[in-house]
Length: 97
Image (cartoon, rainbow, N blue to C red):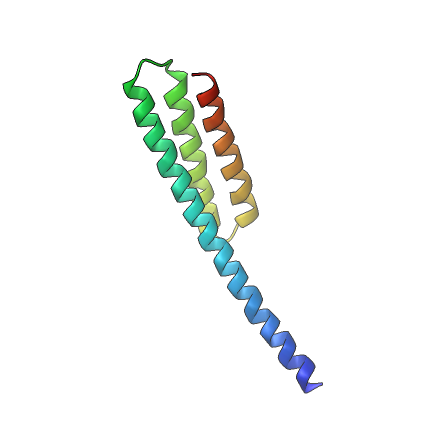
């Protein structure tokens, strides 16, 4: 019995480590996508493109920034879906260029 209890305690510690790692990955990826979206919005606004393109990049960056905030709070699944949505918004802006 003592061996089974020790194994369960090890699994709980592993789970906490995985959750912490998932938070850091969500925050890091959200921040990276936010920076990329803002940089693309600034670069596209300097060129001769329709106004929708830099706005789409900026909106996608805002969505990814909110994903980073949610990831820091532990809502990693919602953060993942927001990062996907933000990237799709940026891609939509890129396609309309």
